Length: 305
Image 1 (cartoon, rainbow, N blue to C red):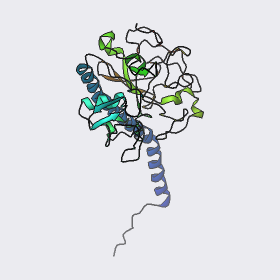
Image 2 (tube, helix red, strand yellow; image 1 turned 180 degrees about the vertical axis):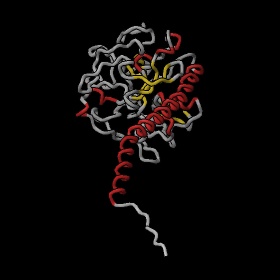
Image 3 (tube, one colour; image 1 turned 45 degrees about the vertical axis):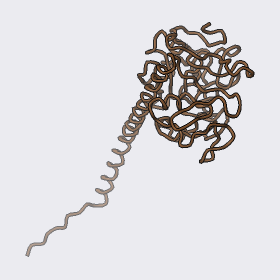
């Protein structure tokens, strides 16, 4: 009778195998994480390409006029616009662009400021109901004011009022697309971090829906300020104290939609921003890729006249 030896791993062998697996996981995790983040960036660029079609269609349907950043506040029901899904009080550029490609921005658009929507959100700070309006890297940034995508409003459609008593005294709107000399190299929309750009990284606060805290990520993110800002006579999202900037949330890059409709991935430096070591975004960057003329100028009330 022959005795067969039972084959089995020893404890030491098991520990060695587990150690090898742990090392492989540690080595592969950064690569897998980077791959996931690249996939998110691709999806973000897809969102902006869809919205870029809406930008082109809006321009074509409105006498070559580019979309405004956001319709201004005059009274409880004005300004408004009829968008996909219904009448909307003070829609942003995103809502108007998306409506042109048949994408409804809101599940319950509100025509006036007074009532809240069915989700309890105020009429001028509703949440986007479709993911195409929200960067997939920050899916919780659904607030139309504290949005993840910002618009080059200063040069393409600053519809803020210079005279509160005159509902048509827009600061820089309408802007016709023929004023843009190089549409392929003029930024229209990009990932935005909001007014948190004004503060050191250590002072920035997490995103909060409906909040109006300057240090908060995403605060007033729909207004995207260019790199160069005139701090005395110019314009900022929170003039005169707070500015916004692009957010390099995709592997240290921001996704950008250009006026001609194509999308790319750019670093803040590529776009002209100057950033201090502590993260504060300066006022004296380069606006050559923002002004529409290729010139490095800051927007002031006399610009383009």
